[in-house]
Length: 411
Image (cartoon, rainbow, N blue to C red; front, side):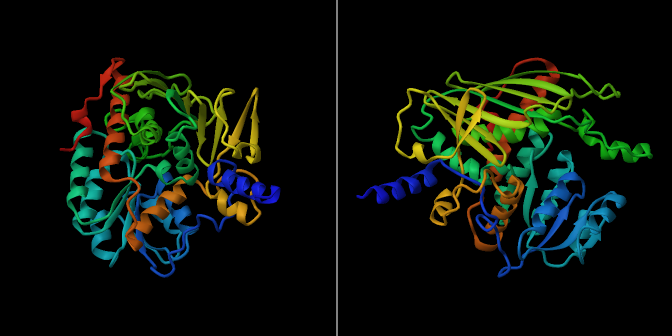
């Protein structure tokens, strides 16, 4: 093999394994023009609008209906779409929207079961945001209903669809990371979580996420997603969780903590520390898995691997894209790098061109239109929802909560 051939080979290996730059928008882009799926969005709040925005980037998807019980939100959502019908209830939607290929449910967590089961009963394929429900009983009932139906059901735990995370997971499950030592994750975003409204009844409805009677708070609403990432990477679920929380900034009468810390213990002795706060934005959202050969840091559209000095080299590292973090140097992990290397585009920046939600929605529609395997089933979504519910309980009570196998099993 000549030096040129060897260099090309190692560059391709680097692309396949680790070195990565920004993905041109045509890589990992979804196109459903041949299928033309007709879809509806149930829930026109923040997450519903995000779903609307990402579907708007996806070729061939027709948003034919929007549903929300709040008339003002419904009308605001309709202004963002073209030719969509508006409905004030799920019953009206299912009766009046005509044939639907799929619905996307982005209603308050504690309403997911009622909404999703109505759609499943009507034979409509369902994308349900996570967590699946606010109680273990309701989450289990929804998961069983989804399992027994003929409808496609995907839970919105979008790390599983993220191309960068998929690549990082392949590293984690190889000798590149080796034995797991510990995990640290956080979600920091300075915001109030409160939506102002002049009508007290409307304000209560809009701010359900602050209501301790129905909301799982930070451990459930945010933590469930990050707990799922770790469970998906490791193939295991924690056996117990401890937690604490307090109000550090938003002294506005709320009862749910605006800052929390959790410690989740796994069966082989590894621990995951998790911090979330509405009082500070530093560091944003990420997960870091520490192994004996390397650490992997995941941050939405980006991921890096930090190799230990005594970790074996595999040849591709010399060609990998690198980034300095204080005293550490990270190898940038980029999905689709083999294609980029072949096109001579390997060094065009860093990161995914779309947010993780885009890929989760696209994967779901591939299941609907092409029969592709569901990336996050009701069973998988249920188990991670249980972890989030147990973490919320630990924060609320200040006591250790055991996560028995019986809780994670649907029988």
